[in-house]
Image (tube, rainbow, N blue to C red):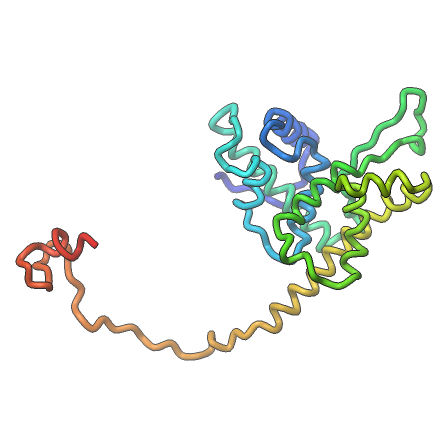
Length: 244
């Protein structure tokens, strides 16, 4: 893969490229919209453990890095590069400029509505994507204090089937307020795990790194592949014990 500047924001044309890819792969990927993908990657960078790129990339590709139907030899490099940049952009904003953190929610207006305040925000896809990231490390997320449960609760409400019943019981004002709380809650979740990971790292015992390491000496001379086998068979090492 060629060198990428992972700090470069995704351009409008590159967003279109990612969106087209998701639509082409909708039979295999759980993320059929950019909103769901954004939510998933936000959870990946916000959780209790670092998830290796090959693991979360496989999730985007339907569980298997070989699953996508690529249109060209160059497409895998382009798409993987864009996904890595998007993940890095999300992580950088949350860590360095959290005031600019803005989840990629969907929005639409009814045909007879034109004013910005008439725009209807849809968070369900983003929350569903976030939950997929949560599931990848469910064992590490669960079992923590009530503060974390409170923070993630709005995401579960809009991102799971179980939350649908609760949404129906909310007033329009309460539903709107719950939606609007998600960005702040997502940032707080990121900061929650960041602090815990920092504490775990501080508590880690690295004293063994300061201990002098004993030099390794080979007791017996190294046997060449064409040398007589030391077992006494009379065969060459590569034809005898060297086979194992």
